[in-house]
Length: 347
Image (cartoon, rainbow, N blue to C red; front, side, top):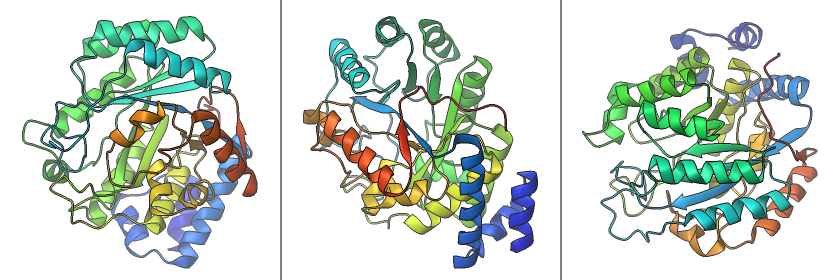
């Protein structure tokens, strides 16, 4: 185990079976060693800085029927909402005043947000706040759509690959969704000049250690600018409602591994981590993460964007949420910084 961790820290690469061994045989000692390496590497690149992204959850409508997601189209209990373009722009204005310089527009695959509508929103935000980055997380679209949105000013795109195993992908998604198309979208985003984010759920139904090893190898080879991993949390109105949540322990372990795989990657401590443990986001930062994403959505809709049960931070105003995170990060020796938070290319 020690020699594998040394190899990863030195070469940033392992074979799939080595990743599998690293995960399957983890223990407190290996977790501590990985964590120490990960924090050291991140500090060398980013210091004690933690970047914030202003998250705007723009729609809970979705055409897809992913088996794990509370927004799935078959969920008749989901409270649907859709922010208007003016509401989305107003959220970005409020965020700008609070010091945010990256906005993440996230939503289900809602047919209302055509290229013209979504592109117009991106253009408006960039026109008002030219020093900011706009990140989209709006699922699978055509290459032409991605290209148009890039021309409109979108800088980054988050599209979790969910799993690097086609067999596992088929167990999490309806038949009309395709592993090959998800990978095609990720590669097209890269070709079009986006900063691209991928990621997966830790502890998702049917996930094996081999699947996780494949995910780690995919991240090594794809080299995303961002990588979002978080524990699977079931939603009561999905087919996976009885499955257990992923764990804080394994998620933090994998955050450390990913930091060593690709040292400059932007790595969030997700809301899901904070949902399964009150200090989950802090633990994520102390395991190698360097991004947090407070919610800028209107307070009245936050409970309706229910990807999973019991999501935290649904009752605070944006300013309160920002200040709460500031205090939390300072207590563990880190500092939230006001910048776009681009990935540093030089290692």
